Length: 101
Image 1: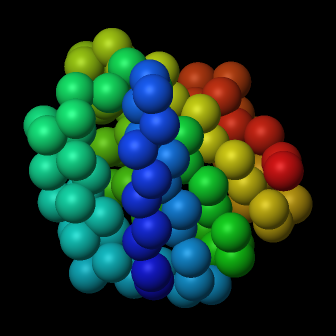
Image 2 (image 1 turned 45 degrees about the vertical axis):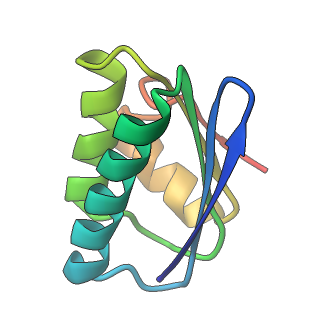
């Protein structure tokens, strides 16, 4: 997994690149996201998932934490229809503002 971040006026754009996201990748993602949020205090997180077919539950959990507890707007942009389908089955598309791009 490769993580690319970009600061925009009201938040952060984060690009998750790579087909397979391991548990170690998920831990790294959470650490980096925590550092970025504490540094920038964004009001919006835009996460772009480019090649992955699934997201580990720890990544989904951390995104939900930022949305529900930290009150940061979360938008999830996904390329793979399989990932969108699995999030729909888990009733997470609305909660995470997930959509295809």
